[in-house]
Image 1 (cartoon, rainbow, N blue to C red):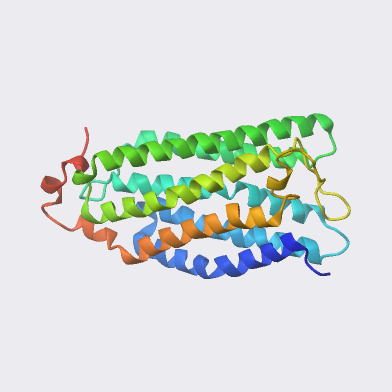
Image 2: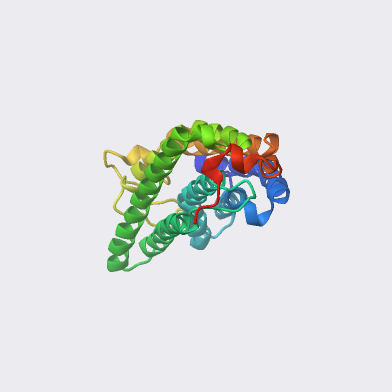
Length: 280
C-alpha cells in the first residue's frame, strides 16, 4: 500500500531521528545519568519520534487496518512536545549547578518536572479516551487533551522566565554553562512555534477518531488546517517537524562541542562564580 502524505512524513521522521538517536546515546554516555537529566530526555524524545514514525508507517502498510497502531502513533506524535520541554527544563537546571557539580533548587525543578508529566499524562489519556466509542469518554478526553496542552504552554512560559532570570545573572554563571544558556536561548523561539502549533492543533477539533479508512475524522473549523492528523501537511512539516529538528540539532551541537564537565574541574570556580555557591 502506498503511503499518504502523513505516512511519507512519518517515514522521513524515522530517517531524520535514527542518526540523532545514536548521537543522543553518545551524549548521555558523555555526561552520565546523574548530571544529564536534560540530555537523557533528548534521548527519550528521539526514541519517541522514531517509535511514533514506525507505528504510523506500519499502520498504513498493514491490512486489514489496525487502529491500535494509529492510536499509538498519534499519541506519540501529540505527546512529543513534553520531552522537549522537559529536556529544556533539565538543561536550564544544569546551569544552576555548583562548581562541584551539585544541583540547586531541586524542589522547584522537581515541581516543574511534575507539571510537565501531568501535562503529558493528560494528553495521552485524552487521546485514548477520544478514540473510544463512548460519547462521555470522548468529551472528557477532549477536555483532558486541551488541559494538557495548556499546561505545556504554561511550562514554556516558565522556561522563558527562568532563561531571562539567568541572563540577568549571566556574569555569575560558570564559563561553559554561559554558552549552554546561549544555545537554549537560540532554541526557545523554535520551541515557541512548536508549542503554538500544539495548541492550535489541539483546539482545531473537538474530537477525532480512527476510522476504517485509516484516517481521522476531518473537521472544517477555522483551525482545521492546523490539525495534526487531518490538517495541511505543509504546516505540520514547518511548525512541528522542522521546529523540533532545529531544537535537537542545537542541543546536540551544544552537548558535543561544549566541554561542560570542565566547569566542575576548576578549584577557583566557587570564588569566581558566586551564583553557583551551595545554597543552605
